[in-house]
Length: 496
Image 1: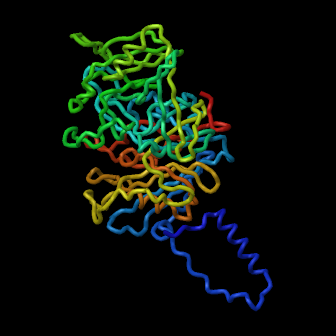
Image 2 (image 1 turned 120 degrees about the vertical axis):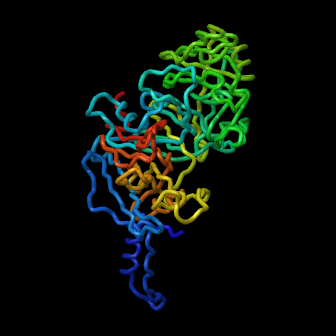
């Protein structure tokens, strides 16, 4: 791959060349050879930058590129680049889980819920990290209008220093993610270390946060998680562990899990044990069962939610036994939560300035495509939908450019005139990375966020990406677990 000069590097190269031209010639000075023509970047070769640049929102510049050479396609794709510039307006980057963790909402709904004050509404945003969604437990009763499904993060998620999920295991190194602090994203490999500690020093491993105990979806959370065959579960990436303790935070607004949500996973059937903590970590209640369902109770509670200012611990297997033995009412327990940057071997303090969005893949690192980035596609030719090619998931990315500014990116298809074909179109991971590596964009680091039907880009209150999920014959934007947005702030944190 050819690495193109970024603007800052290009300036240094130009100065060096100028000095060389002013040096006196000597007998040993070689004759200058003709300058080789610089090869076109993927963007420069096949795309054209639209003349219209959207700067209608202060601090936000949205540029669009339209595909010209369509290969097997019958319609061009659209690449959108949103640069956030805190030098021109008081804006900074943050993330949100909307009305609450575990709830299903669109990006538009999540951003609208950031502030009830119109002048403090987010100025731009995209969908966030990877997640899994599933139907709610049949016994759960939800408020009218709430989608009957819950969401589980795949990787680290945090807002204001509060973790919503643990990292994926990644052989002990965790997985890629963006730490957003003081308005700027830092992309690296992240691992969480979670624990429970009693006053006498007794400790226990805390397996995860805000998800069903005994069953992790999308990725293993530790070395004890075992993959279940797809022919058993009917879906890829379901992991089980019969001995777990899971914490539920005050940000978790979905009812805490009951046993028996997944009929294909027996470790999740364990009635288990449940403990309620107040804001100081003191046990206020300890009971058999989980989520209002207790052994031998013919009339279970419809739902149990995390009390205001408190937390809930649920255990199964030996995890339930540890809670039952050690956490009686009045006992105090310390919840330890560490976020480790495994690339640099350092801990990142989880204070209120820190938000985190998780992912599996960094598509640009230090101005180049990481060697370990998979292609995610070994097929060629036309795709299933008319006018598309294979492996064309819409894409979303978060990154930084040579000026150190946050950048939001989407690669999608265009809105179609009718519902006979999908609006979705994009690229495989490596093709997407090659496009972002083009010299015209000046990107240094970039993290692949959730794509496909989740891909959503907004500036102000306008959505610029087409919906690709079809519900009852109508295309809609997908409900997501979290969002990344640029909000009004003087230094990267808005007043909450």
